Length: 225
Image (spheres, one colour):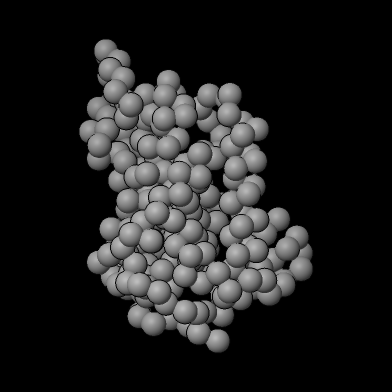
């Protein structure tokens, strides 16, 4: 178990967008607790359903009105299924995203974050095209942040909880181990349909983050010791 707690990488910019994304995710979760209890179809409306995203027809006589599938690619990345789901995603976002924002600038970072999230959802939808279980969570977008961090700050030191021991490790070890577990779990669960962890959303978001970072980052930026 590798849990990143904080990094020793200095910020260049004040991460206004990262903090805003954190705040929006927490606010949406609070609203979920207020409204989702009275709306049993909340996740079906605002989550991203693979069957609909990949061109499936809306079932006749639905007891709810799903949001437009295209918009669900964005709404789904701000919805979480529980306290642990939210807390773990926000911890990873807090550790990795602020330095990625420093590389890209505020506007490009927001676009980067959203595109990674959309790519992650598409990746999972293409693997599980028949699934009618909605995809939710920011983990795909955050996977993209980790990939971007790896590209630009692979030597940065990250305080990581390894089982119960806090250890300083280089970013390439922490992110590389994490991504390796996603690939292994994705392959092991390849034939399962719907439910559980969306492993290929994590993989898709990570690959998108790698590609986009090379395409839109402002040249080479060396980690500062």
